[in-house]
Image (cartoon, rainbow, N blue to C red; front, side, top):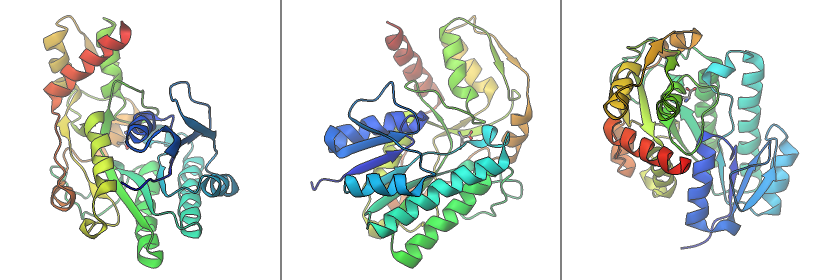
Length: 314
Ligand code: AKB
């Protein structure tokens, strides 16, 4: 296998923390450069402080390490993004432009851009939302992801840049905490249950959303990036499905293991965001093009989450 030099932008985030470790296992510690705006307290290996809104900063690292692949994970998420819409747009778009331009100018071989179910808004079929749906997002984060999908497709079409992308559902993992998303409750709930604390949910009990276990999300990312170029027929971003559930369903699954676990519902502004998103996703293009198949459902994820959170406490 030839060697790649990988740059991860946003390595301290929920996905970045886990993806960085997996890519280090795959390509070797010395071939993976993790970066973020703050130092990491979790990652080993090479780490650079990088503010990706600074074009020269991105370019300097790409040139210095002769980077061949970039995973651009930095973004302000759906719920936090609504607190300062213009700043969110600026951060999400500027960092993407800097990555795309640096990649074009330095012949970076492959780029990964995460999109999200937040690209969908009202006017789509909420069950099994198709790959090619009308995209009318309700959040600035979603707007930046729709624009991002168009830009990555443009860079592929115009300059032949090999950018690949997934529309992630809510990602749930024991390794790291999410920050500022609408699906974050589904991670926090496990921490509360483990600590025998009651949980106040910011979504209503029936708010069904598409979700995915971290193991599946990371495997999907690596499988997409490893797929032969000729298999990639979607150059905007692939729909991806893991499972779908509501707060009530996850609470019931947790109560099978923690019968005393208590949940109360106090929906806030995030409920409106959740209402605008699909309940489940049709990911048949990902299945067809690069053989995507999720391994985890709500039950197996819950068992694995709790087993691993317990191990981390010991
Ligand atoms: C969020 O809730 O904002 C993210 C997402 C679904 O993109 N987890």
